[in-house]
Length: 103
Image (cartoon, rainbow, N blue to C red; front, side):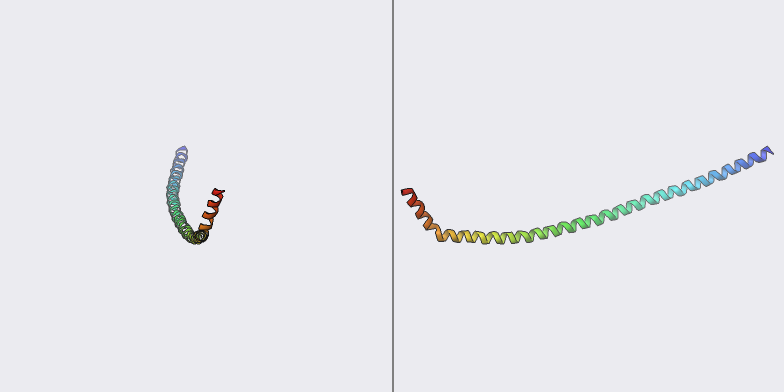
């Protein structure tokens, strides 16, 4: 009778170890699968983020170029106005400075 109980215990232990080993292998496979999927998702997310960053940089460069063109046009217009005023009033200013120096 004790031999039968010991054999049953040994068989139950063997069966339980086999089940634990099978579950451990399944868990290891699942862990590897999760690690792979995590890496794939990170790569996808990184690529999407990089694309968005590049699009934003391109958009900002375009906006800066447009803003620069507007500012340069304003600058040129103001510079032309200043030059025009200078050409019109140059001699008057020189005369006024000369008269002020003589006095």
